[in-house]
Image 1: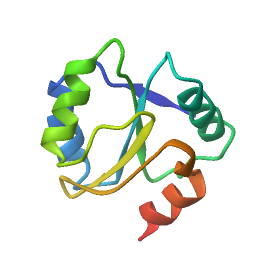
Image 2 (image 1 turned 90 degrees about the vertical axis):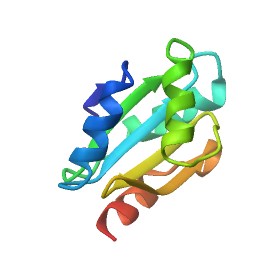
Image 3 (image 1 turned 90 degrees about the horizontal axis):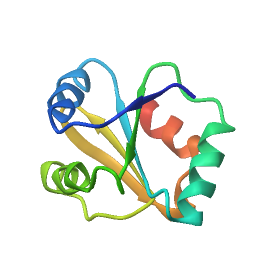
Length: 110
């Protein structure tokens, strides 16, 4: 898994613009949560689709970015959480044990 670290709010504009060219995936991870660690591990053991960029947000270190994501993409904050951004909008989000690379692949291909 080649994570792109999400560590500034300015990157959200880049993600929105890039999502017009190819899907952008944001994984919001809490370094203090064992469920989040399990979800991250499952993702990293799976083959990611080549036609999407994967961003990693340490929401403990960057809570402000997490809050901005919630308001920018109109999603309720959860952790762990996956968001799929296409054409500037969040078209899919999932959290906790429901995070699955197979589902992400399906949504990316849709």
